[in-house]
Figure 1 (cartoon, rainbow, N blue to C red):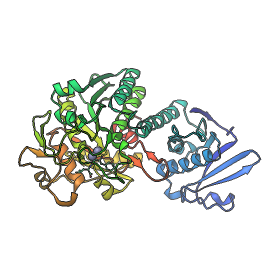
Figure 2: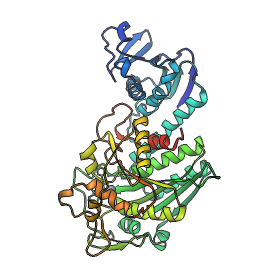
Figure 3: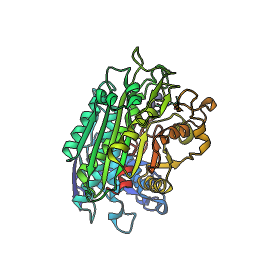
Figure 4: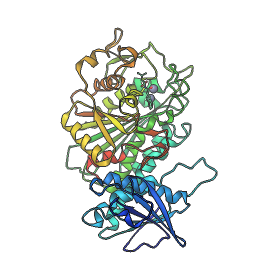
Length: 464
Ligand code: BES
Ligand code: ZN
Ligand code: ZN
Protein backbone atom coordinates (compact mmCIF):
# COMPACT_ATOMS: atom_id res chain seq x y z
CA UNK A 1 0.00 0.00 0.00
CA UNK A 2 1.30 3.44 -0.98
CA UNK A 3 1.13 6.30 1.52
CA UNK A 4 1.37 10.01 0.77
CA UNK A 5 0.80 13.09 2.89
CA UNK A 6 -0.73 16.24 1.57
CA UNK A 7 -2.47 19.49 2.51
CA UNK A 8 -5.32 18.92 0.01
CA UNK A 9 -7.25 15.85 -1.06
CA UNK A 10 -6.42 14.61 -4.57
CA UNK A 11 -8.14 11.22 -4.93
CA UNK A 12 -11.76 11.05 -6.13
CA UNK A 13 -12.66 9.05 -3.00
CA UNK A 14 -12.45 10.95 0.26
CA UNK A 15 -13.03 9.83 3.81
CA UNK A 16 -14.25 12.63 6.06
CA UNK A 17 -15.08 12.38 9.79
CA UNK A 18 -18.05 14.09 11.40
CA UNK A 19 -19.18 14.43 14.98
CA UNK A 20 -22.89 14.82 15.73
CA UNK A 21 -22.25 18.52 16.30
CA UNK A 22 -20.53 19.01 12.94
CA UNK A 23 -22.91 16.89 10.84
CA UNK A 24 -25.54 19.57 10.30
CA UNK A 25 -24.22 20.29 6.78
CA UNK A 26 -24.90 16.71 5.61
CA UNK A 27 -28.66 16.11 5.35
CA UNK A 28 -30.06 12.79 6.60
CA UNK A 29 -26.89 11.83 8.44
CA UNK A 30 -26.83 11.78 12.23
CA UNK A 31 -23.07 10.92 12.47
CA UNK A 32 -23.67 8.05 14.88
CA UNK A 33 -20.55 6.09 15.82
CA UNK A 34 -19.47 3.73 12.99
CA UNK A 35 -22.25 4.91 10.64
CA UNK A 36 -21.18 5.91 7.16
CA UNK A 37 -22.90 7.65 4.27
CA UNK A 38 -21.76 8.45 0.74
CA UNK A 39 -22.37 11.70 -1.15
CA UNK A 40 -21.43 11.96 -4.81
CA UNK A 41 -20.20 15.12 -6.48
CA UNK A 42 -19.76 14.02 -10.10
CA UNK A 43 -17.14 11.27 -10.07
CA UNK A 44 -16.05 12.26 -6.59
CA UNK A 45 -17.39 10.23 -3.67
CA UNK A 46 -17.20 11.63 -0.15
CA UNK A 47 -17.58 8.96 2.52
CA UNK A 48 -18.69 10.55 5.77
CA UNK A 49 -17.84 8.58 8.92
CA UNK A 50 -19.78 9.23 12.11
CA UNK A 51 -17.89 9.79 15.38
CA UNK A 52 -20.89 10.32 17.68
CA UNK A 53 -20.78 13.12 20.25
CA UNK A 54 -17.72 15.36 20.20
CA UNK A 55 -17.16 15.07 23.94
CA UNK A 56 -16.87 11.28 23.74
CA UNK A 57 -14.51 11.05 20.76
CA UNK A 58 -11.37 9.04 21.57
CA UNK A 59 -8.64 7.45 19.50
CA UNK A 60 -10.60 4.21 19.60
CA UNK A 61 -13.71 5.88 18.18
CA UNK A 62 -11.69 7.39 15.31
CA UNK A 63 -9.90 4.09 14.60
CA UNK A 64 -13.15 2.19 14.39
CA UNK A 65 -14.91 4.86 12.27
CA UNK A 66 -11.98 4.98 9.84
CA UNK A 67 -12.14 1.20 9.44
CA UNK A 68 -15.86 1.40 8.65
CA UNK A 69 -15.11 4.18 6.13
CA UNK A 70 -12.42 2.27 4.29
CA UNK A 71 -14.62 -0.83 4.10
CA UNK A 72 -17.28 1.34 2.47
CA UNK A 73 -14.72 2.62 -0.06
CA UNK A 74 -13.65 -0.92 -0.94
CA UNK A 75 -17.29 -1.97 -1.28
CA UNK A 76 -17.60 0.83 -3.86
CA UNK A 77 -14.48 -0.62 -5.54
CA UNK A 78 -12.40 2.43 -4.76
CA UNK A 79 -8.90 1.39 -3.68
CA UNK A 80 -7.28 4.87 -3.74
CA UNK A 81 -8.54 7.03 -0.90
CA UNK A 82 -7.81 10.45 0.56
CA UNK A 83 -8.41 10.57 4.26
CA UNK A 84 -9.00 13.91 5.87
CA UNK A 85 -7.50 13.92 9.38
CA UNK A 86 -10.31 14.47 11.88
CA UNK A 87 -10.54 17.92 13.45
CA UNK A 88 -11.74 16.81 16.85
CA UNK A 89 -8.62 17.57 18.84
CA UNK A 90 -7.05 20.97 19.40
CA UNK A 91 -5.16 20.52 16.15
CA UNK A 92 -6.11 18.40 13.15
CA UNK A 93 -2.88 16.51 13.76
CA UNK A 94 -4.20 15.08 17.02
CA UNK A 95 -6.22 12.30 15.51
CA UNK A 96 -4.50 11.33 12.29
CA UNK A 97 -2.68 8.34 13.82
CA UNK A 98 -5.76 6.34 14.93
CA UNK A 99 -7.45 7.32 11.64
CA UNK A 100 -4.56 5.89 9.61
CA UNK A 101 -4.42 2.84 11.87
CA UNK A 102 -8.14 2.25 11.26
CA UNK A 103 -7.61 2.54 7.50
CA UNK A 104 -4.79 -0.01 7.37
CA UNK A 105 -6.46 -2.46 9.77
CA UNK A 106 -9.99 -2.00 8.37
CA UNK A 107 -8.75 -2.29 4.78
CA UNK A 108 -7.57 -5.85 5.41
CA UNK A 109 -9.41 -8.80 3.95
CA UNK A 110 -8.16 -12.37 3.44
CA UNK A 111 -8.98 -12.95 -0.24
CA UNK A 112 -6.33 -15.52 -1.21
CA UNK A 113 -8.92 -18.21 -1.85
CA UNK A 114 -11.51 -16.00 -3.57
CA UNK A 115 -11.59 -16.18 -7.37
CA UNK A 116 -13.11 -12.73 -7.47
CA UNK A 117 -10.36 -10.85 -5.63
CA UNK A 118 -12.62 -7.91 -4.75
CA UNK A 119 -11.08 -4.48 -4.37
CA UNK A 120 -7.93 -4.03 -2.27
CA UNK A 121 -6.58 -0.86 -0.72
CA UNK A 122 -3.76 0.42 -2.96
CA UNK A 123 -3.05 4.10 -2.12
CA UNK A 124 -3.81 6.24 0.90
CA UNK A 125 -3.35 9.99 0.93
CA UNK A 126 -3.38 11.44 4.42
CA UNK A 127 -4.66 15.00 4.36
CA UNK A 128 -3.74 17.31 7.24
CA UNK A 129 -1.15 19.54 8.90
CA UNK A 130 1.86 18.64 10.93
CA UNK A 131 2.02 14.97 9.92
CA UNK A 132 5.53 13.71 9.26
CA UNK A 133 6.23 11.03 6.66
CA UNK A 134 8.33 9.19 9.22
CA UNK A 135 5.68 8.96 11.95
CA UNK A 136 2.89 8.16 9.49
CA UNK A 137 5.14 5.51 7.93
CA UNK A 138 5.60 3.88 11.34
CA UNK A 139 1.85 3.73 12.00
CA UNK A 140 1.33 2.21 8.56
CA UNK A 141 4.09 -0.34 9.10
CA UNK A 142 2.70 -1.48 12.46
CA UNK A 143 -0.67 -2.01 10.75
CA UNK A 144 1.08 -4.09 8.12
CA UNK A 145 2.70 -6.20 10.85
CA UNK A 146 -0.78 -6.86 12.30
CA UNK A 147 -1.98 -7.84 8.82
CA UNK A 148 1.03 -10.15 8.42
CA UNK A 149 0.03 -11.90 11.64
CA UNK A 150 -3.57 -12.19 10.37
CA UNK A 151 -2.41 -13.74 7.09
CA UNK A 152 -0.41 -16.41 8.95
CA UNK A 153 -3.44 -17.41 11.03
CA UNK A 154 -5.89 -17.38 8.12
CA UNK A 155 -3.70 -19.65 5.97
CA UNK A 156 -4.59 -23.34 5.63
CA UNK A 157 -3.20 -25.50 8.41
CA UNK A 158 -1.48 -27.84 5.95
CA UNK A 159 0.46 -24.88 4.54
CA UNK A 160 1.10 -22.94 7.77
CA UNK A 161 2.57 -25.99 9.56
CA UNK A 162 5.29 -25.76 12.23
CA UNK A 163 8.22 -25.76 9.80
CA UNK A 164 6.55 -23.16 7.57
CA UNK A 165 6.17 -20.84 10.55
CA UNK A 166 9.75 -21.52 11.60
CA UNK A 167 10.84 -20.48 8.07
CA UNK A 168 8.84 -17.26 8.38
CA UNK A 169 10.54 -16.63 11.71
CA UNK A 170 13.98 -17.18 10.17
CA UNK A 171 13.12 -14.73 7.42
CA UNK A 172 11.94 -12.09 9.89
CA UNK A 173 15.09 -12.55 11.97
CA UNK A 174 17.36 -12.26 8.93
CA UNK A 175 15.64 -9.10 7.66
CA UNK A 176 15.72 -7.47 11.09
CA UNK A 177 19.35 -8.34 11.87
CA UNK A 178 18.25 -10.71 14.66
CA UNK A 179 19.40 -14.19 15.60
CA UNK A 180 17.04 -17.16 15.29
CA UNK A 181 17.44 -20.47 17.10
CA UNK A 182 15.25 -23.24 15.68
CA UNK A 183 14.96 -26.59 17.45
CA UNK A 184 13.71 -29.36 15.16
CA UNK A 185 12.10 -32.58 16.43
CA UNK A 186 15.41 -34.36 17.18
CA UNK A 187 16.77 -31.48 19.29
CA UNK A 188 13.40 -31.12 20.99
CA UNK A 189 13.66 -34.77 22.13
CA UNK A 190 17.36 -34.52 22.91
CA UNK A 191 17.02 -31.40 25.04
CA UNK A 192 14.16 -33.03 26.94
CA UNK A 193 11.16 -30.95 25.83
CA UNK A 194 9.07 -34.10 26.11
CA UNK A 195 5.72 -32.37 26.50
CA UNK A 196 6.23 -30.54 23.22
CA UNK A 197 7.44 -33.76 21.58
CA UNK A 198 4.37 -35.65 22.87
CA UNK A 199 1.89 -33.08 21.55
CA UNK A 200 3.58 -33.05 18.14
CA UNK A 201 3.98 -36.81 17.82
CA UNK A 202 0.72 -37.62 16.03
CA UNK A 203 1.42 -35.47 13.00
CA UNK A 204 3.44 -35.79 9.82
CA UNK A 205 4.32 -32.12 10.39
CA UNK A 206 6.87 -32.32 13.23
CA UNK A 207 7.14 -29.75 16.05
CA UNK A 208 9.53 -26.79 16.22
CA UNK A 209 10.68 -24.39 18.89
CA UNK A 210 11.81 -21.01 17.56
CA UNK A 211 13.54 -18.28 19.57
CA UNK A 212 14.30 -14.95 17.88
CA UNK A 213 16.41 -12.49 19.79
CA UNK A 214 16.20 -8.72 19.23
CA UNK A 215 18.93 -6.76 21.02
CA UNK A 216 18.17 -3.06 20.70
CA UNK A 217 19.94 -2.20 23.95
CA UNK A 218 23.02 -4.43 24.24
CA UNK A 219 24.29 -2.48 27.28
CA UNK A 220 21.26 -3.54 29.34
CA UNK A 221 20.48 -6.90 30.94
CA UNK A 222 16.74 -6.16 30.84
CA UNK A 223 14.95 -8.53 28.48
CA UNK A 224 11.30 -9.32 27.83
CA UNK A 225 10.35 -12.78 26.58
CA UNK A 226 7.22 -13.12 24.46
CA UNK A 227 6.07 -16.72 24.15
CA UNK A 228 3.32 -17.60 21.67
CA UNK A 229 1.24 -20.79 21.57
CA UNK A 230 1.68 -22.18 18.07
CA UNK A 231 -0.63 -25.16 17.60
CA UNK A 232 -0.96 -25.01 13.83
CA UNK A 233 -4.12 -27.11 14.03
CA UNK A 234 -5.81 -28.31 17.20
CA UNK A 235 -7.89 -31.38 16.40
CA UNK A 236 -7.98 -32.18 20.13
CA UNK A 237 -5.88 -35.30 19.45
CA UNK A 238 -7.32 -38.57 20.83
CA UNK A 239 -9.83 -36.37 22.70
CA UNK A 240 -11.03 -35.31 19.27
CA UNK A 241 -12.98 -32.06 19.06
CA UNK A 242 -16.57 -32.39 17.79
CA UNK A 243 -18.18 -30.58 14.87
CA UNK A 244 -18.95 -27.03 15.89
CA UNK A 245 -15.67 -26.70 17.78
CA UNK A 246 -13.04 -27.93 15.35
CA UNK A 247 -13.66 -25.78 12.26
CA UNK A 248 -11.72 -22.72 13.43
CA UNK A 249 -8.80 -24.54 15.02
CA UNK A 250 -6.22 -23.30 12.54
CA UNK A 251 -6.43 -20.20 14.79
CA UNK A 252 -4.62 -22.07 17.56
CA UNK A 253 -1.26 -20.62 16.50
CA UNK A 254 -2.47 -17.03 16.84
CA UNK A 255 -0.19 -16.48 19.86
CA UNK A 256 2.87 -17.39 17.77
CA UNK A 257 1.60 -15.29 14.86
CA UNK A 258 1.27 -12.27 17.17
CA UNK A 259 4.80 -12.80 18.50
CA UNK A 260 6.11 -12.87 14.92
CA UNK A 261 4.15 -9.71 14.08
CA UNK A 262 5.84 -7.98 17.01
CA UNK A 263 9.33 -9.24 16.09
CA UNK A 264 8.86 -8.13 12.49
CA UNK A 265 7.94 -4.66 13.76
CA UNK A 266 10.90 -4.48 16.16
CA UNK A 267 13.33 -5.35 13.36
CA UNK A 268 12.29 -2.17 11.55
CA UNK A 269 11.27 0.24 14.35
CA UNK A 270 14.44 -0.60 16.29
CA UNK A 271 13.55 0.62 19.81
CA UNK A 272 16.24 0.55 22.57
CA UNK A 273 15.00 -2.62 24.28
CA UNK A 274 15.80 -6.33 24.34
CA UNK A 275 13.18 -8.90 23.42
CA UNK A 276 13.23 -12.62 22.82
CA UNK A 277 10.29 -13.94 20.79
CA UNK A 278 9.46 -17.60 21.24
CA UNK A 279 7.13 -19.64 19.01
CA UNK A 280 6.28 -23.11 20.27
CA UNK A 281 4.94 -24.95 17.25
CA UNK A 282 3.16 -28.29 16.91
CA UNK A 283 0.23 -29.84 15.10
CA UNK A 284 -2.09 -31.54 17.62
CA UNK A 285 -3.23 -34.40 15.39
CA UNK A 286 -5.24 -37.54 15.93
CA UNK A 287 -3.76 -40.81 14.69
CA UNK A 288 -1.97 -44.00 15.65
CA UNK A 289 1.19 -42.15 16.72
CA UNK A 290 -0.61 -39.47 18.72
CA UNK A 291 -0.04 -39.28 22.49
CA UNK A 292 -2.63 -40.86 24.79
CA UNK A 293 -4.81 -39.74 27.70
CA UNK A 294 -3.51 -41.43 30.86
CA UNK A 295 0.14 -41.23 29.77
CA UNK A 296 2.67 -39.53 32.02
CA UNK A 297 5.48 -37.39 30.59
CA UNK A 298 8.39 -35.60 32.23
CA UNK A 299 8.70 -32.00 31.15
CA UNK A 300 11.89 -30.05 30.37
CA UNK A 301 11.71 -28.63 33.91
CA UNK A 302 11.74 -32.11 35.46
CA UNK A 303 8.13 -31.99 36.70
CA UNK A 304 6.00 -34.92 35.54
CA UNK A 305 2.56 -34.45 34.02
CA UNK A 306 -0.39 -36.80 33.76
CA UNK A 307 -2.26 -36.30 30.50
CA UNK A 308 -5.96 -36.14 31.34
CA UNK A 309 -6.96 -34.68 28.00
CA UNK A 310 -4.91 -34.46 24.81
CA UNK A 311 -7.03 -31.39 24.00
CA UNK A 312 -5.42 -29.43 26.84
CA UNK A 313 -2.25 -29.35 24.74
CA UNK A 314 -1.52 -25.61 24.80
CA UNK A 315 -0.45 -25.56 28.44
CA UNK A 316 1.84 -28.57 27.78
CA UNK A 317 3.79 -26.96 24.95
CA UNK A 318 3.86 -23.62 26.80
CA UNK A 319 5.23 -25.28 29.94
CA UNK A 320 8.23 -26.59 28.01
CA UNK A 321 8.68 -23.36 26.05
CA UNK A 322 8.61 -21.17 29.16
CA UNK A 323 11.11 -23.32 31.07
CA UNK A 324 13.44 -23.64 28.09
CA UNK A 325 13.30 -19.91 27.41
CA UNK A 326 14.10 -19.16 31.07
CA UNK A 327 17.15 -21.42 30.97
CA UNK A 328 18.46 -20.35 27.59
CA UNK A 329 17.70 -16.60 27.61
CA UNK A 330 17.30 -15.55 31.28
CA UNK A 331 14.50 -13.01 30.63
CA UNK A 332 13.54 -10.32 33.16
CA UNK A 333 9.85 -11.06 32.53
CA UNK A 334 7.81 -13.48 30.46
CA UNK A 335 4.56 -12.74 28.67
CA UNK A 336 2.82 -15.65 26.99
CA UNK A 337 -0.03 -15.34 24.50
CA UNK A 338 -2.23 -18.32 23.93
CA UNK A 339 -5.59 -19.34 22.50
CA UNK A 340 -5.73 -21.47 25.64
CA UNK A 341 -9.32 -22.05 26.71
CA UNK A 342 -12.89 -21.98 25.42
CA UNK A 343 -13.77 -20.80 28.93
CA UNK A 344 -12.37 -17.32 28.25
CA UNK A 345 -15.05 -16.89 25.56
CA UNK A 346 -17.68 -17.66 28.18
CA UNK A 347 -16.14 -15.17 30.63
CA UNK A 348 -15.20 -12.25 28.40
CA UNK A 349 -16.61 -12.85 24.92
CA UNK A 350 -14.74 -11.76 21.82
CA UNK A 351 -13.68 -8.21 22.71
CA UNK A 352 -11.45 -8.69 25.76
CA UNK A 353 -8.62 -11.12 26.50
CA UNK A 354 -7.91 -12.74 29.87
CA UNK A 355 -4.92 -11.51 31.87
CA UNK A 356 -3.26 -13.70 34.51
CA UNK A 357 -0.11 -12.72 36.34
CA UNK A 358 2.10 -13.34 39.36
CA UNK A 359 3.23 -9.68 39.33
CA UNK A 360 0.95 -6.70 40.01
CA UNK A 361 3.23 -4.18 38.34
CA UNK A 362 3.51 -6.19 35.12
CA UNK A 363 -0.24 -6.84 35.12
CA UNK A 364 -0.94 -3.13 35.63
CA UNK A 365 1.32 -2.09 32.79
CA UNK A 366 -0.21 -4.66 30.44
CA UNK A 367 -3.71 -3.56 31.42
CA UNK A 368 -2.81 0.07 30.64
CA UNK A 369 -1.34 -0.90 27.26
CA UNK A 370 -4.59 -2.72 26.54
CA UNK A 371 -6.69 0.36 27.27
CA UNK A 372 -4.46 2.54 25.10
CA UNK A 373 -4.23 0.20 22.15
CA UNK A 374 -7.90 -0.82 22.23
CA UNK A 375 -6.80 -4.48 22.61
CA UNK A 376 -8.33 -4.81 26.04
CA UNK A 377 -7.41 -7.12 28.91
CA UNK A 378 -9.17 -8.08 32.13
CA UNK A 379 -7.35 -9.71 35.05
CA UNK A 380 -8.34 -12.97 36.76
CA UNK A 381 -7.09 -14.30 40.11
CA UNK A 382 -4.62 -17.15 40.58
CA UNK A 383 -5.49 -18.22 44.14
CA UNK A 384 -3.72 -21.13 45.79
CA UNK A 385 -6.97 -23.18 45.86
CA UNK A 386 -6.85 -23.45 42.07
CA UNK A 387 -3.32 -24.89 42.14
CA UNK A 388 -4.55 -27.67 44.47
CA UNK A 389 -6.87 -28.88 41.70
CA UNK A 390 -3.94 -29.38 39.30
CA UNK A 391 -2.21 -32.02 41.47
CA UNK A 392 -2.09 -35.58 40.17
CA UNK A 393 -2.10 -38.90 42.05
CA UNK A 394 0.29 -40.53 39.58
CA UNK A 395 2.48 -37.55 38.60
CA UNK A 396 3.38 -34.09 39.90
CA UNK A 397 0.69 -32.35 37.90
CA UNK A 398 -2.34 -33.15 35.78
CA UNK A 399 -3.07 -31.13 32.65
CA UNK A 400 -6.79 -30.67 33.47
CA UNK A 401 -8.09 -29.66 36.90
CA UNK A 402 -10.18 -31.88 39.18
CA UNK A 403 -12.97 -29.26 39.23
CA UNK A 404 -16.24 -30.56 37.78
CA UNK A 405 -17.71 -29.48 34.44
CA UNK A 406 -14.76 -27.40 33.33
CA UNK A 407 -15.32 -24.84 36.07
CA UNK A 408 -12.74 -22.01 36.09
CA UNK A 409 -10.95 -23.66 33.16
CA UNK A 410 -9.18 -20.46 32.07
CA UNK A 411 -7.76 -19.95 35.57
CA UNK A 412 -6.70 -23.56 36.06
CA UNK A 413 -5.07 -23.53 32.60
CA UNK A 414 -3.09 -20.43 33.58
CA UNK A 415 -2.25 -22.04 36.94
CA UNK A 416 -0.68 -24.99 35.13
CA UNK A 417 1.64 -22.67 33.17
CA UNK A 418 2.50 -20.78 36.37
CA UNK A 419 3.94 -24.02 37.83
CA UNK A 420 6.75 -23.74 35.25
CA UNK A 421 7.51 -20.06 35.70
CA UNK A 422 8.60 -19.97 39.38
CA UNK A 423 9.72 -16.50 40.49
CA UNK A 424 10.15 -14.75 37.14
CA UNK A 425 7.56 -11.97 36.68
CA UNK A 426 5.10 -13.50 34.26
CA UNK A 427 1.82 -12.73 32.57
CA UNK A 428 -0.39 -15.01 30.52
CA UNK A 429 -2.85 -13.61 27.99
CA UNK A 430 -5.68 -15.97 27.05
CA UNK A 431 -6.61 -14.79 23.56
CA UNK A 432 -8.94 -17.66 22.60
CA UNK A 433 -11.87 -15.21 22.38
CA UNK A 434 -10.13 -12.30 20.69
CA UNK A 435 -7.79 -13.91 18.15
CA UNK A 436 -10.42 -15.08 15.69
CA UNK A 437 -13.71 -13.41 14.78
CA UNK A 438 -16.27 -15.82 13.34
CA UNK A 439 -18.69 -12.97 12.76
CA UNK A 440 -18.60 -10.14 10.20
CA UNK A 441 -16.01 -7.37 10.51
CA UNK A 442 -16.61 -4.78 13.24
CA UNK A 443 -14.52 -1.60 13.45
CA UNK A 444 -10.87 -2.47 12.91
CA UNK A 445 -11.54 -6.14 13.71
CA UNK A 446 -11.95 -8.14 10.49
CA UNK A 447 -13.74 -11.43 9.99
CA UNK A 448 -11.48 -14.44 10.81
CA UNK A 449 -7.97 -13.76 12.21
CA UNK A 450 -7.73 -10.44 14.08
CA UNK A 451 -3.99 -10.11 14.78
CA UNK A 452 -4.84 -9.46 18.44
CA UNK A 453 -1.81 -8.76 20.61
CA UNK A 454 0.59 -7.16 18.13
CA UNK A 455 -0.41 -3.56 18.84
CA UNK A 456 -0.94 -4.27 22.54
CA UNK A 457 2.57 -5.66 22.97
CA UNK A 458 4.24 -2.95 20.89
CA UNK A 459 2.50 -0.41 23.11
CA UNK A 460 3.58 -2.30 26.26
CA UNK A 461 7.17 -2.43 25.02
CA UNK A 462 7.07 1.29 24.20
CA UNK A 463 8.15 0.41 20.68
CA UNK A 464 5.84 2.43 18.47
N1 BES B 1 -7.31 -24.45 21.48
C1 BES B 1 -8.24 -24.76 22.50
C2 BES B 1 -8.94 -23.55 23.09
C3 BES B 1 -9.81 -22.72 22.17
C4 BES B 1 -11.18 -22.82 22.22
C5 BES B 1 -9.24 -21.79 21.30
C6 BES B 1 -11.97 -22.03 21.40
C7 BES B 1 -10.02 -21.00 20.48
C8 BES B 1 -11.40 -21.12 20.54
C9 BES B 1 -7.53 -25.50 23.65
O1 BES B 1 -6.43 -26.26 23.29
C10 BES B 1 -8.52 -26.43 24.27
O2 BES B 1 -8.95 -27.33 23.61
N2 BES B 1 -8.86 -26.17 25.53
C11 BES B 1 -9.78 -26.97 26.27
C12 BES B 1 -9.14 -27.36 27.58
C13 BES B 1 -9.90 -28.40 28.34
C14 BES B 1 -9.74 -29.75 27.67
C15 BES B 1 -9.34 -28.46 29.74
C16 BES B 1 -11.04 -26.13 26.52
O3 BES B 1 -10.92 -24.94 26.80
O4 BES B 1 -12.12 -26.67 26.39
ZN1 ZN C 1 -6.94 -28.23 22.61
ZN1 ZN D 1 -5.42 -25.59 21.58
